[in-house]
Image 1: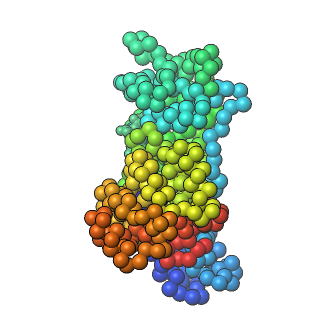
Image 2: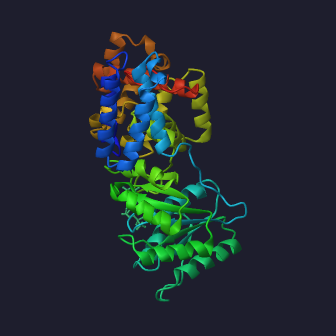
Image 3: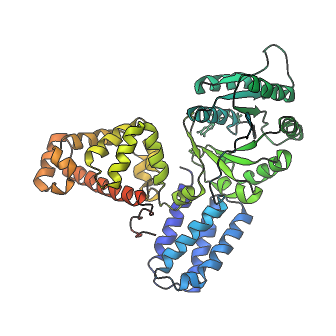
Length: 445
Ligand code: GDP
């Protein structure tokens, strides 16, 4: 997954650091060097790496660390904070116009994922009670309009496009007309998809700039493929100069990318990342939270996103019940089972597991994850009595053997499940209390 290599390297570096008590300047330098190499190998732009490591070094050598009870942990905290900073700091949400319609224009290279993102955003906004419309202002690429129509249909929103057979239309006119149309038909959000090219070229940029000028959008979102590596910087700069975008969408963050683009684009352009596109399904869209992303990179897990995703699969009442149970510390294996069955509905278990604290250390297991594990886990819990599900503490050796036999699994699988449940319960408790979940082997920050 994205960042997994970077993540592993950082985790290893910190594990080494934790073997030391007080940190000497040499220790700090060695650590900073490791971080620097890990970032460069992840394709983060050199200027960004330099500034980042300089800040980490300065802070790591300061009293803030020297006087800390646990200096190594303090360094991890510094890296966490600096990562959050280069990812943009605060979460930047989509801005809506005071007077509808809100106009959102998309720009980016061909194949970046604009059209897919248009559908994802439309679906999400529709789910939030908006009445978006998609506009095809990409009139060059053969079948671009057709592709948007397919995406619109999947998202359940209508698509504004010129009548086919009119030859090559004028995208500026189409975009302008679409806004009048939206106003007439009471669509409160207009998402304008524009043409892309395989490389940045002047004509495309001029056209995009002309559309921007004509429709005066509330947001201009630059969609960038997280896989483009070192080219990210030049491309982002070109688009920033060309269309002065207001925010960034990282696409294909699910792929096996090193993540450099994500870590460079904010510093290079000064523009925030609003969304991360994480798959080919229209549901695969996340609001980008710098803090959560940093914690994923540092393998502290992204429990908040995990819970949000899980809640999407629950009906609200169920979600409230679970939250209430977590708060009362009454979360049982039965609830665990119910949640698991609902999480199964979400699709990719691998992606969800990747958000757990310690995921970098479990990468291989996660890659090898197969759904029969879920089925076996269900079988184990179903082989327990009500009393056992309510209170796993009563599970002694003979009970565990009975459950293993009853579910066609082994005692060690039963043990693992109980352990996982206890960890999950503990984690959720600390999240519910607003604290940071503790990191296996690291204590809590
Ligand atoms: P556009 O030319 O910028 O409109 O790009 P498209 O939306 O047509 O996307 C290009 C290709 O990337 C298509 O095959 C999409 O299915 C794929 N794609 C788009 N977003 C994602 C994503 O987040 N993850 C993955 N894995 N593929 C994506």
